[in-house]
Amino acid sequence: MTSTHTQNEGSAVLVRDLRKSYGEVAAVRGVGFEVAKGEVFCLLGPNGAGKTTTVEILEGYRTRTGGEVTVLGMDPADGKRELRERVGIVLQQCGVQSDLTVAELIEMYGRYHVRRRPVDELVELVELTEKRDVRAKNLSGGQRRRLDLALALVGDPDLVFLDEPTTGFDPAARRQAWSTIRSLCELGKTIFLTTHYMDEAQFLANRVAVMRAGEIIAFGRPDEIGGRDLRPAEVRFVLPPGRSLDDLPELPSRDIALTGDRVVVRTAEPVPATHAITSWALEQGLELEHFSVAQPSLEDIYLELTGSGNNHAIEEAVR
Amino acid sequence: MITAQAYPLKRDLGLVGWQIRYEQRAFWRNRGRGVFTFAFPLMFLVIFASLFNGQHMSGRGGIPYNDFFVPGILAYGVITTTFVNMAISTAILRDEGVLKRMQGTPLPRWAYVAGRIGSTIVIVGAMTVVTLALGVIAYGVHISASTLPAVIVVLVLGTIVFTALGIGIVRFIPNAEAAPVIVNLTILPLTFISGIWFVTDSMPTWLQNIAKVFPIRALADQLQHAFDPRTSGSGFRGEDLQTLAIWAVVGIVLMVRFLRRPQGEDV
Image 1 (tube, rainbow over the protein chains, first blue to last red):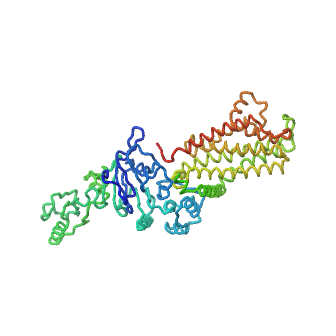
Image 2: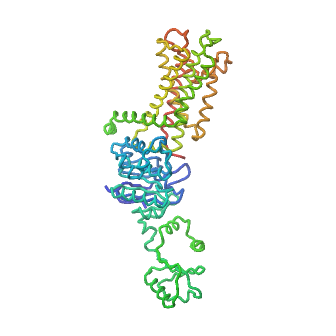
Image 3: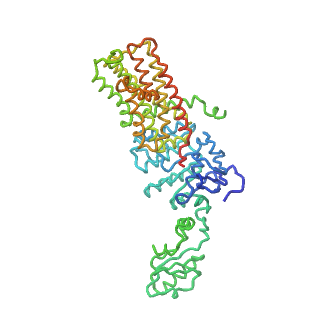
């Protein structure tokens, strides 16, 4: 996965052969990727995969054991103030001076930056206008998370690290946060996202890297990753009573499975397959319950790649 | 230096000034921490001074008891507002990830620490003024012009020692919940053998020698000496100042060692 071409002007983050060991334990084992300016890059992976270690090396919180890291043209290990000036960070669990109010905190963190966004604008952006004079300790979890985002954006950064930014959000708040993040992209910011939520990666990310056991095992656009676009589509339905697989018409598929009364037809040609099945059902006057056609979801690919769900039979049985 | 150009020192000093203001605001707003840190020594002052008001000491040339007790409480006040307050609040900030967050901002670490220390100095100053005002007005303590420089010097030195130690000890505090216990276990026994609550002149020599190693006795003894009506001259005590100076070095070394460690390197 190590990018072989030299860093171009457009890259916000460049990582080559990154390694990090804690004593004998290798947490990150030769990771490489490039994040282009203005893109949303998402790092996926189960707990313990080395995501947080990787991100915290990029943020300058941890030192690396080996490899090359460049963030906005600087090495985060140098701890340069210019870099902190241009990077906004939303950490997973990170407190604030909880006796200060929302507006006071945004003002305080804003002062640290040479270039800063006005308090009112940020309060509005993260929709905390009504809570601006409430002390941080009295905010709800979701409101605290939005305050975190405001504090990360206070210096009008070029690159924003978001470590599981919507954990603990209700679905409406998550949609809201997504649209805020999308609006950041429209302003030309680069977003480095880590998340557990596949729908979040699917919705936000231009490119996704999947980590497992300290290595990147898949890399690409969310709709292409793990060969997702090349995978056969799945046509599913419940076999009508009194019918068997032999009764089905001829289908452009060699992978037709029956589990209980559920049929899964895996095919590279979903349109002819669907047509054949539905025509057959209409001719016979049959109702096909739970009929669906779908590409494998990002979640399916993710579970398969990270080795936590590749037993299809079990998956079927659970359904 | 490139950074010196991009970030003039004047701007950073301005940031320190702002940080002091924010720290002050947060300190006084939190009643549990702010007001009680401040009220604790004053409560002892009122209780003890009322108990012994008008009485004279059996030892120490029979000076009024309050001339011994008020400077002792002042020393205790300095310790609670610096060491105790700094250690507990820093442990909380560390555990809650505030230190980590601060590390990710462009504010230089030294400026943040300076802001926290500056805020502590404001609190010590307020504590000193209130304690001495109460001592002078209510309990007839005298501040003599000749020993005033000694009082100021030792208060500054004491603030340095106990603020630095307060930050430095956080390294040995595993978590914020343990902080009050560890801090009080460090301080309380020493205050008893250091002559803050009662005269320790007749205490066994070995115990006195232990007390002499630590800075609490040095601070209390120097202040008591400066407030002793029998003291003539400037009131400086070389032995006490020497102890405090050594602990200032120890404190600063421990403080720097704690502050140098990056926040977030868990393993």
